[in-house]
Amino acid sequence: MEVEIIEQNKKDGKTKFILSKTTPAYVNTIRRIIVAEVPTMAIEDIEFRQNNSVLYDEMIALRLGLIPLTTDIKAYNLPSKCSCSGAGCARCQLKLTLKVSGPKTVYSGDIKSKDPKVKPVYDKIIIVKLLEGQSLEFEATAVLGVGKEHAKWAPGHIYFQNAPKLKVLHQPEDVQKMVASCPKSVFENKAGKFGINEKRINNCDLCESCLHVPGEDGVMEVKADESEFIFTIESWGQLSPKEIIEKAVETFDEKLEEFKGLLKE
Image 1: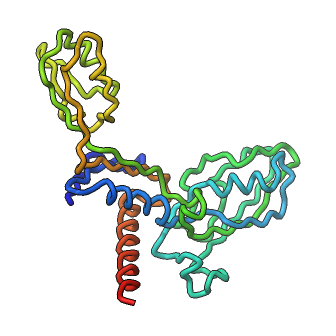
Image 2: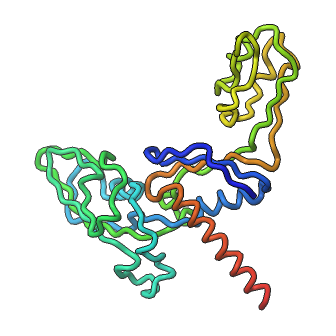
Image 3: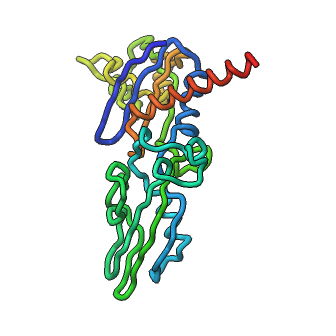
């Protein structure tokens, strides 16, 4: 198997790379492990001490649980794997607090964390709007969890597709018409000749629009490569794409070792 990074945007938390000389089953296994098994921090329990806003406690709790928190996976354990057996300790949970009064729009950035490494990824997520005389106060407990238990622990949007194999079979009657047929701008008009823009070829999502241009039958050949895949990680901010893939591979290795042990038994 070979890996080639083709896009890396640290600001947006997006990484795209090509996995070649592999199979759909292997690539999809990595995707499923990332979504279901890579742990992140999220708010799990909330003790409300004051809330006379327009939203019930349960509604605010739902909003808080979906606020992504930066995650230090080396500093915390999953409750099920902690030495406290999930009873609750500094190694498997973290306290966050909030105390505000209106009139005010309460944002995720108003939440105070006891660990500076674990805090809301985005400061401007609206929790609730308070009017004059209204207030909100709570203490929340954040824990490590995985996506198979609840979507709030999923680390991001993960997907892949077969790499495109494109070939121009003959020149079209209307070059510009063929260029415009691609919604991803994969084609180009170079000195009056129709061609493939090699720098943008990986943007092709195999929609086959270029195969159905009126009057231009047989211009293009579009195939999906069955051994090469474009893999995309769009992190929601809890972990970087690098941390996500590294933890996924580590988890995969652990599962394989566990399986080997069971076979020996």
